Length: 299
Image 1 (spheres, rainbow, N blue to C red):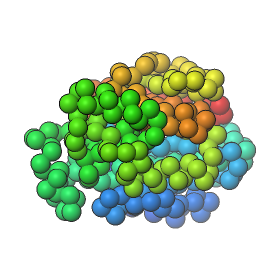
Image 2 (cartoon, rainbow, N blue to C red):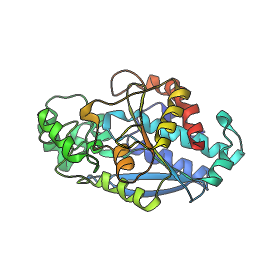
Image 3 (cartoon, one colour):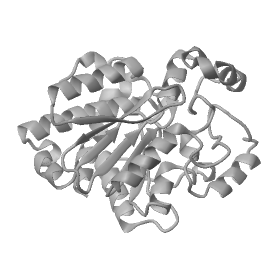
Image 4 (cartoon, rainbow, N blue to C red):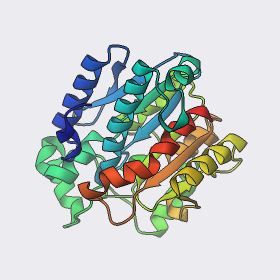
């Protein structure tokens, strides 16, 4: 196992880079690449293991205050690598066999600037400090990127309707949350994820958010496999299938994967409480979703 301190601290840029470096040094079959960089130049890492055919994607931390999902991704990647090497079967899944059939790509943190703002404040994004200070208005939760754009409102899926809903809720300019930007894919973080998906054509994708212990699988003409994926995750984790509120529908990664890429996808809202969820819930919540994360590799 990598240094247990990885799971005793919020996953800032330094800790993430150190954890990824340690994993790649320990498991030489784990492939790491930078799929893009944030507005402030921070790396967006992708970790891949197994076959280059029929890959699946687990992506997390689209929102700054939801950084606990980065820890889930790092821990899961570590356990997958250990099982792949040992040819063991955690949660009844023969990981080596499964990943010979299909690869797994994990993005631990889609929004590295947002995490730094949540943890360190506006001083972590010098170029955008003035903007962040002006729009935060004393808010203690920061979900957006450094430009005040909510990345999960910035994908090209029902974007026009989403903008109408934003305006109806008086969200018309950069904000700590829920402002989708002037146009789809206006941000380097969403461009990086879009390009990765266009290049790899994933078999399915799971987007990890917080909180609520809910699973969202519906968007317009929902693929049957999205429903199966959602039901599998929910039944094994004790989470419930739910429908997000209107202002959280459209513009999201899951919606774009289903609507544009025609790829089965779900959103998982991990944990229960108020974001950012405390570190004390990390291990018990990981144990709650661990079986679902492994078994979904077989869906």
